[in-house]
Length: 321
Image 1 (cartoon, rainbow, N blue to C red):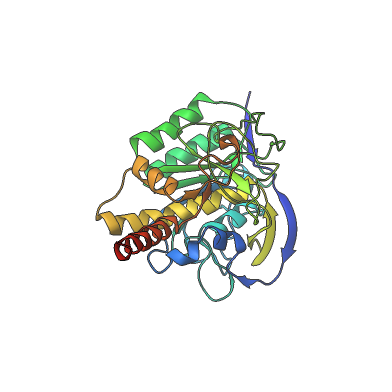
Image 2 (cartoon, one colour):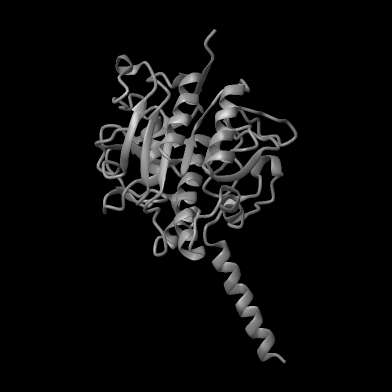
């Protein structure tokens, strides 16, 4: 019997024909303040989703390649067009180009490898996802982003994720899921977001309030903006969605920035655990249960802001002697 996984359910708020902005979610995690140091150049992010509108003005320069693992287009492996909209939206949040129009992604110079594992109805077989992760490993990507999930803990899926993370040092970022009930004392698990090896992402709104729909459990690592997120949509358009699907690409894009930035700072490539530590150093607790927010909200300028506070305090102590 074939088992299926689906895109993490999301809510379409509105479709837009024209936009010209840095999305509020991108601003909330302070990505623009990092762009003078890193924009994700040279970092490849594999996005496992419904495909992508590769001709979208904000994405056409960001797509490094792709492959179709679904039965759409008669299973043509070279056709990864998005007939759903979810994948195009995710790609825009990660890496929409800084081109003076439309929207800008968190890492506007990162490369996207689009691996289509969900068909036009938003569902896909676990086998397709497992094969796509192996393909991403073979392509030596830096980050894998998955805004999808299912109720089954599948050994084959878990094994290939461990292979990606532990054996190949790939950062795997997954949506926590949208089955939450707004209560931290109840656990809601979906997979692959429930695996310890992945970076599981919950959602907050643009006022930093915890999203009631966001799954709560003891594997949530961080939260990011996931409500009323505007990004790219097929047909050269834009749309506003809500869901942990929308929070996840904020974190994937953040890791693209951090990977480029830390390679410059440390003059070497950091390991997956080291990069995870760099991400956690840049989170702010919001006062919710760790089951809801994990380590807190991704806030990319936190290290620099703490340095500034420390240096000001040092100067104050010096002059008050």
